[in-house]
Length: 285
Image (cartoon, rainbow, N blue to C red):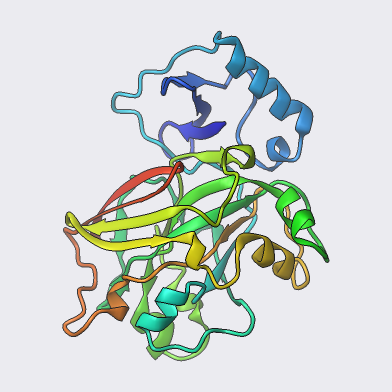
């Protein structure tokens, strides 16, 4: 299923995209797309039955905002430097273990919402990423099979990053990762059954119409199953948590000087095979 949330910020209603591409209203079946839904097999079965019935009301998508596909996110966990080609472009050694950082849930916005360039920023960068949405509580997992069984689905994430704040201002990466609007998510939560191999997805990003990233999740150093298993030994993952699994080559930081960092007025578009497309304009904070 392709699940999503539509409406003004803070007032989204649950919906789905049916097999014919029509937008269908789920508000008569479930309250929201959140942790309680993702952890409830019976509720998900009701959604599948409603979708198959063809009786769900159609929504007019004209002018209708798409919000983040998951409500009430507990935490966003980022994985840094997780693509072989991205490590090569930055001249970085391949990490022996996943590099982990956290993004606040309040950085999450809809896939087409405005992204704000932070005040004082000189190095705001783009990062198209595969997001994993957790559907089962995960702690101390031992196998890849156990890890994948905890995945509710996948989504497109844009891990916007301010490189000067992240790298040059001391301390942790968090300062360059947690500016407002820095995690556009969606448009859809695509359930795991529709993504048979998360390591076979094309990832692309354009800036002002120029293709900047054209990669594949096959280049991930630590694949999805390993990332979920690994994280479960350092933190408990709960339904509704989001894991952003790293970005392929092509970010501004990896380009020759002058590096083409984002500026107000730029337009960024990104997509992942089968997971939908985002489009954001950038404005000053």
